[in-house]
Image 1 (cartoon, rainbow, N blue to C red):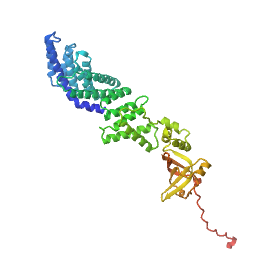
Image 2: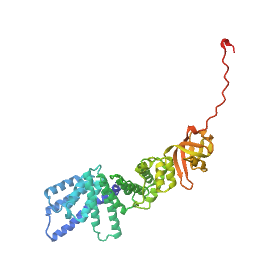
Image 3: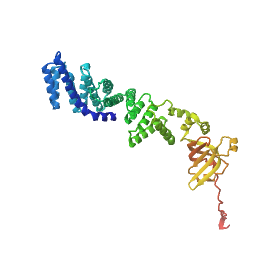
Image 4: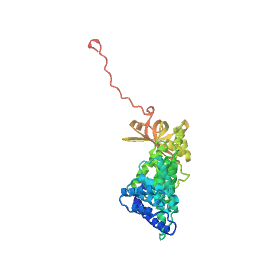
Amino acid sequence: MNGTRRLASLAVVTALCLVGINARRVWAQEAAAGGASQQKYTMAEYNAYQAAAAEKNPAAQLKLLDDFVAKYPNSALLNYIYTLYYKNYGTQKNFAKTIEYTDKLLALGDKASPSERYDAYYVRAYAYNNIQNPDPAMAKAAREAALAGVQAVNQYPKPEGVDDTKFAEQKKQSLVFFLGTAAKAAMDAKDCAGAADSYKQLLTITPDDLTANYNLGKAYMCMNPPQTLDALWSFARAATSKSATEAQSKQVKAYLRKVIANYQGGTVCDTLTDAELNELLQLASTSVERPASYKLISSADLDAARKDMTIASVVTDLKAGGDKAKLTWTAACGLEFPDVPGKIIEVNSGPDYVELKNAFVTSDAEFQAATKPNMDVKITGQPEAAKLEKDNAVRFTGTLESYDPDPAFMLHWDKAKVNEEDLPKAEKKPGAKKPAPKKPGGRN
């Protein structure tokens, strides 16, 4: 996760320096304690450690550390030796070896202090975030270590003299870092559910975080089956994040719109997709969790609604209102319907357009009773349609573009063409009188 990597990059230099300082501080404490009780190491071990700690050349220091481990494989000073190892590899950006030696220190368990374990978990997480294309086994181990780092943060004692507020803020930043690393590692390991769990924990600390919200959406999308509604909600939270720049928000909204369209099987009505997008953005900006009441019609719902659909069934469902009307309209919007029958109530035309105001009718009785239009039909490429007359029957094929609900129910059609049989017949021009055929011999 880019956000995790940026956070780690800002802190890593300090962390790598502090672990060395911390090791020497703890060494001093242990040495003092050893003077009052049974000594756990020899003076030769101590001198070898001191020589390695004082060495500034990375290659030379590694040689001294290797010599120490070879000579004293069970030394009580290994926690300080492993700290020097991973600090050395970390400054050289050898992240695989950094991880190897943080793991060696962590394997010491209680032989390492809580602060030493915290430092090791932190540097390990940083190193992992800089590994390119980690394999699943490495990713799984990184997630487990990052979650252990969360526990290390919670167990870390507040140092004397440190302000409570400042310490709480430092713990918060560490938790964000470890949870972000755990989530990234889970995604690398294809553990989408685990990633979602870590991102959700992270968002309890920083609910408006752009990257965490977006990545939570990605985690929901990669589940089997995908949790698309939760993913849409998370993407919308990212798009409306106060920390998002205008460019970032625009980019996430464009992606979110594609996800909505794909979820609905490539809905053909752009205006409807835009309306669903705007509604989702407004709702998500006010709530961290997706409410159970939020639903979005799926492609399976739309396919079922389109089965046996006719323009007559569409009109009936739209006039009924409610959820049925919403489903029918989502399924019908943008579709082309053939041979739509109607009674012409009004004809409007200009140099480059013809518009019919029709009443939708399905029987002679409805035709006779119709006096008001409920269809607005824009005719394309048929100027002769301007000659259609009021109160005549007409059929057309057109694309259903939008509708106005009751009480002023109106269907709006675009790119329509009147059936050729219903167009006014062109008047025949009188033909020129043919000359009489000539008689044989050239005489008439």
